[in-house]
Image 1 (cartoon, rainbow, N blue to C red):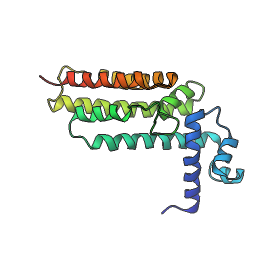
Image 2: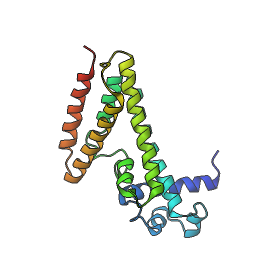
Image 3: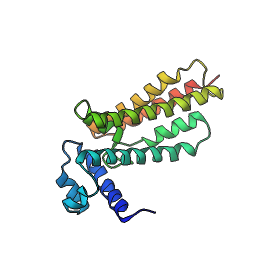
Image 4: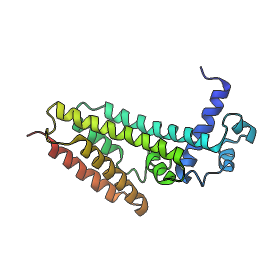
Length: 198
């Protein structure tokens, strides 16, 4: 059972996460966090030692939300191709209707952190590796189950899959139009079909 302190800490994280995800680390001020939470400085600093600590927890919160939403979609499917297609369907119109306020926390943090904020870069890097490993596992499972062609390289394809989705989201965000994103997702579905064993 959560203590009152735990509940306050969670409240701060939940209110701060969308701000960090939308504005980035440097542009998010403690004033933004105070305004979003309605707490006094003592209420924030009584739970967190610094903005850095809040940023780390906020990233974890946003990333875990994304991960759980994806897992929910994936678990509803039985085959590897259907699971990968479910991921693509999850990202349809994502630039207009992201499941996480502010868009993809992994992409946002990776771009925001770069080499200037090493502790956030490390968080984003770990999340990236986890995402790639999950994709690699799905593709390898498809090969093992003879659903996909055995000549497929799971490491290469998982990296291409991820890069295409994230790149397409970025294009859609900059253009304020999901048309390119959705076209690329549809093309990726055709590509998954081409992986299938004949």
